[in-house]
Length: 177
Image (spheres, rainbow, N blue to C red):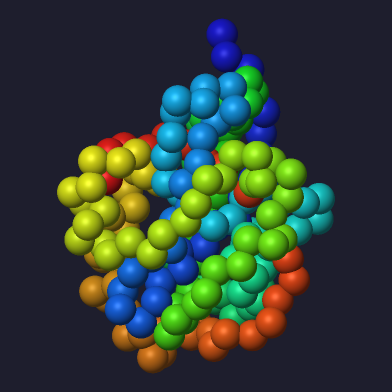
């Protein structure tokens, strides 16, 4: 019987003006050959709301600062179960859509675990996610982004954040994207 550690998370679908989404790539230290792509974001600190955590994680992982209010309402919620570093988690996570015209990712705010397990990042065209053959989390990412980007006007329906200075997060249960 698997005992799950409960966890809550806030995650960000960071999309640029050309419709590409930012994903990080990394691995599970307990299973170094298990490599995958994932969205910015991560576990909530005590007392944080999902929007608070997503804004904090976005600043730490990318250097992009937004306020929790700028994130708006979550665009998707899921509960996932996954192992990471030998611990099984049951994570309730909310995703927020943030649009930027462009952004130069700054990972200076990575914590110890990110520095040890995140090996890169890339802006992915949504069409390429559907056919790349890589493992991506969440599993529904290509379909979710296709639906969200088709349904929203980038000028009005999701926050658009222009670059600003900022200070200086892993789910699983994915599929080949």
